[in-house]
Length: 199
View 1 (cartoon, rainbow, N blue to C red):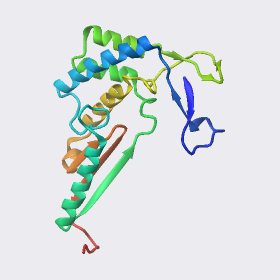
View 2: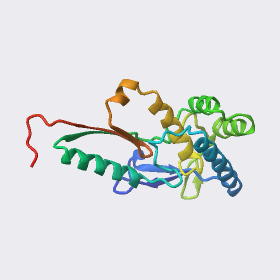
View 3: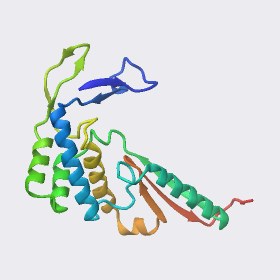
View 4: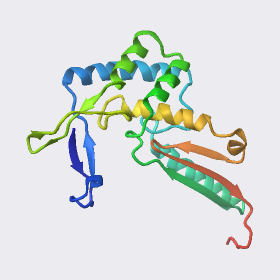
C-alpha cells in the first residue's frame, strides 16, 4: 500500500493519508472480469436498490442532485419546506464487514466459483506500506476492501444495500425520497412550514 496525502491535510498525522492498494496487472485483470459479471448479475436480479447511484453503469450522483433539486422546487411551489438529512459514512471501504458481505452475496444467489473466488479474495489479505522505496512488515487486514481495488466499489455498495434494506419500513414510509450516492445517504420529506413565511 502507498499512503497518499489528502488535499489540505496535515502531513504529520497518519489520518491525513489515504492508503492506495497496489496489486499486480494479472490481479486487476481478474478483478475486472469478476466485477463485470458480478455487477451484471446484481443488476439483472434487481439486488441493488434503485436508490443507489454511485459506481453504477448509466447512473451518476448527478441524478441524485437533480432529484434533490426537484424535491426542493416541488416543495417550494407547494408552499412547503423540505427537511433533509445527510449521513456521511467515513472510511466506507475500510469498514466493510467481510463476513457480512459474503453472507449477503450468498443470500443473493452468488454461489459456486464466483462465491469461492470472492471469499478467497477477501480473506487472509495481507498488506505492507511502501514509503520512499522501503517496505514495512506484512499486516493481516481483518476488515475492509482495498482502496483502489476494482471490485471495492461493488462490494461497498452491496454492503450499503443491506443497510438500506434493514431500515424499518416505518422510516421509509415517512421519507418521500431516500437516495444513496456511494458512501452517503440522504432522506428528504417536504412538510408544511411552521412558524415561517415563504415568499
